[in-house]
Amino acid sequence: MTMKNMLIKNIINKNIGEQNGYTVSENEGAIKMDANENPFVLQEPLKKKLFQEMSKVNLNRYPEAGAFGLRERFARYFGVKKDMVMLGNGSDELIQLLCLTLKGNINGVLVPAPTFSMYKIIAVNTANKIKEVPLDENFDLNADAMLRKIKPNFPALIFLSYPNSPTGSLFNYDRIEALIKKTPGVVVIDEAYADFAGVTLLPLLKKYENLVFLKTLSKSGMASMRLGFLIGHREIVAQLDKVRLPYNINCLSQIAADFFLDHQEEFAGQIAQIVKNREELYLKMKEINGITPYPSRANFIFFSCAFNSDRIYTLLKRVGIIVKNLNSGSTKNFMRVTVGNRKENEAFLNALKSAITKLGE
Image 1 (cartoon, one colour):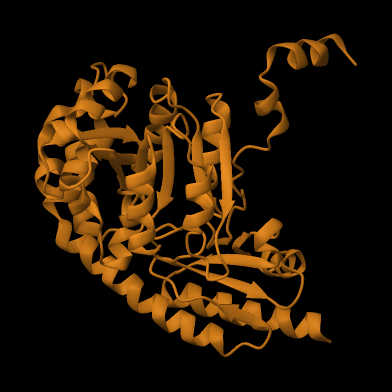
Image 2 (cartoon, one colour):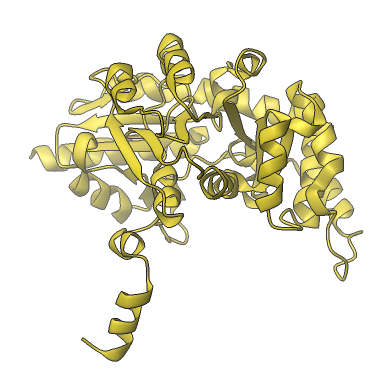
């Protein structure tokens, strides 16, 4: 072992060294259907208007620290008080803030599996003990198994994606509420995909103090701006604010967030079209032998393959289509495809049919 490798082994946290981290595909020119992005771009007049506003920024000055003006606007948008909202550099930063801050006498992280991989990655990176509980056979919460993991000092955080990624399903309401009532810590309900489901659990904030919600503009059409929102009771938000880095939301992202609120109808129209495309894509995928798609309330479709999904992924990638391959553990031979525009969806369906045919020969 070289001196450099020995140094890294001795100074890097063992749990970090042993994990793979979050990987992002880099395939220039490909049809990217793996990141759950909005496939529609802004109409040119709106894009021009946004860029005109951005051109007024004095780049030599820091952005508004804490983005309190935006907090107030989005508090009204979400129907809560302004001291219940905090902005993050995407939801990932907010997950990291939660994992860093909520580590007192009650500590650790509990998550279902499969779910959004960053919960586990960030928990490990922030030196939190983490326990995973497999979903049941219907990809719903195994509430009984999760409740058995809960102790007086564990966990500080339970992360629940609603709808869940990668399954696209909505967890059972009663099971969620059972976890909220039993845990000694905080339940974080991540509603990154709630706009596509047309439902939210935000009203539960009036009933429970140990709840935090995460929202984002990334799935609505502003992924490049990296804007996430945390909504919780003011006492929790105040403590998290102490850990948040100053100036964490840049000027351009703050302008884009204001723009989103000024033009909500444009983004709502795109979301409605994605939902329509999702239902069309799901029905067409059901017609393909060897593929089993699952009903989705998000902007993607989770599906199983009768063939090895690694081979299907390779064949799709060869013709320039990138999806999410989930081939491990409880999701062996499962994949996830982002709902695209009609042209992208057709290209994916044709490539998937061709791959299935080739593997069946």
